[in-house]
Image (cartoon, rainbow, N blue to C red):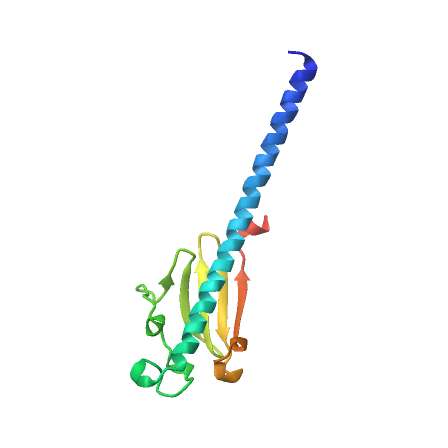
Amino acid sequence: MGQQQLLLLVLATVIVGIATVVGIQAFSQNNVKSNADAMLNDAVRIASDAQAWAQKAQPFGGPADFADFTALTDLNQLGYQTDATGAYVTLNGACTLADGAGPVITCVNAELENEVTATIDNTVDNGLSDASITGEVVRLGEAAAQ
């Protein structure tokens, strides 16, 4: 082989190596971002189910008072199977219910270091409209920052 052919072979090998590394990094970043999106979807779905629960009559499993989110104490009331810690675990992460200005659903994926929340604001239409649910990505994993 001539010197020029060897140089082209080395150059092609380096380019393929760099392209492989860039592709792996892009896949990792996309994986972290798509997980955060999926967890946000889970959190907003749970918040929507909480709104539906708040509108049910008490004999059907709803609160004693219409739109009383304070009676919502765990995700089992919404029909979600929780573990011993009270978290609803999916392939995307673990979601928990907390109380704030309204119910706050927090979903966390410890492996990817993602965290999202969905909050129902009771001051907007008694917490019963689409506008009363806000969702946000609290923390996006380290892999996405690289």
